Image (cartoon, rainbow, N blue to C red; front, side, top):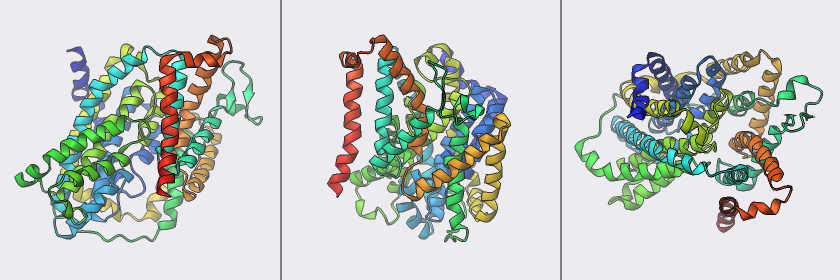
Length: 489
């Protein structure tokens, strides 16, 4: 009963409601704009969350996550350009349906499917995350080391890059985590005589640089890009016939998306593709897919939004990001002094259930705001890139500088913007760098502490059952994507 009151607290907290409303609108705008999305937007606003209390900050980031994931469907349907990677599958049937003069019907189905998928995933989060956290109570330092290694090996299947490139990027992130004082000896490492680097490289300059600044550089090459736009009169709620045709697809894809989201490093893009494929496989009219099938839209949108709640499960329970955006949210938790894990569920249930309740409300909010404001949000795509991206550059610089009033942070942000640009240009995903940076400190710390416990005998790792299970899973997750890649070749 007490947890229920925590769950409903955002409804009666005016500050949280204002934060939720702003986050939902901001997330929708980010989702609509091709090239942005919740990950870049979360990185962009991360420096400004330091002015908020920890709960408000995380609520803002999660609202952007939920609304931004849905927002990508608007441009996917109207201009055949997914606002987010997770909306790529929505283009396959959304745009053909819009070309038939049924853009309102397509957006209505996308909105309803997104809300249902998002709400089901939050319910999964509420029930499954505490259970996973209870299991984590059995973890010691060796178990956390093995878990972190497992999280890193999942990088082989994340992002657009090849498995080997993703692992290289993750290793680069781990290297970055070693900058600064050694936590056991207090000896400076890789500071190059710069005193400000003694505390290490900050999360926020790296995140803003890799996501926001690199995207700005990429979009600068597309300044004159022109989209073919479909005229939208109004969104239409699905008809009774549409509901009868899609309700099984929505529920199935919601389950798929929640499950895929729970897997570390998978996220909404993978979930939407699998949800779309399964919708086609179970459909009575599979030949209509790709030509304007309402089931295709329902399958993709329910799955990618269901992945949002699922991805928060390992993020909150274990401190392992479930997607690119939850890596940004995890960064927000860490900079506010909140360490995810079992102790969080035991010591701060009001904090966690406040997040759960906020995600539920955010899904309802983006349904209302998106339903009545989709036509307005669609017009945001008319903003010329030559005006939009200089504004984003200014916000990035101001936000990064405001952290410590340090120009070094701005230079780090700019350097990582260039690094991110070249990584993307040569098909390296930037997400593994962030995850490697987050997990690097955990890996180093737990490894060294475990070796102290084992008196230097590393073979004792293999005498602990949980450690052994994670090592086996790590080997499987590391080599499976490589084997699949060879099979395709």
